[in-house]
Length: 146
Image (cartoon, rainbow, N blue to C red; front, side, top):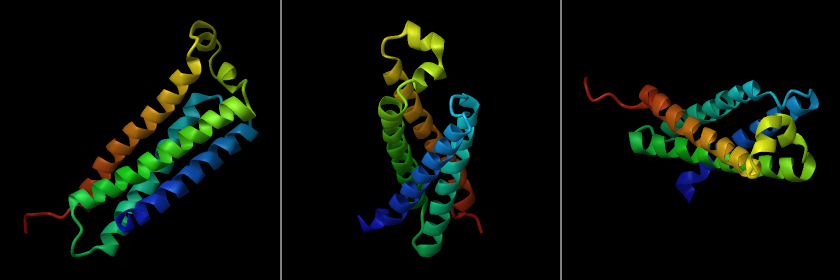
């Protein structure tokens, strides 16, 4: 568990930033515009980049690809899971009309629209995490050629 302290911290902070960003958009009435969710990738990407960077700083001699990749995945997946939980609570308890605002057509055509939206939020977060972790590890990996 000690090995995951850093990515858990970064994951929680990333989730808090995602929630804060969503709530700020909500206050401005922009949270139903799906294009603003693209900035979520920037938030999670920054957290993944930073956790890999700090992992490398903390473990200068023993840092390897697996260690950085694992910490990036843990950070992104934790942020995604926690944000998905928040999002499901938000859309069921605090603003039940949000999903209808999000897409009138989908809400009327599909009876499981809520499940589809939650699944999409989670999958987008997981995919972003994997892609960004792979990309950032290219910056931090050790070169075998000297």
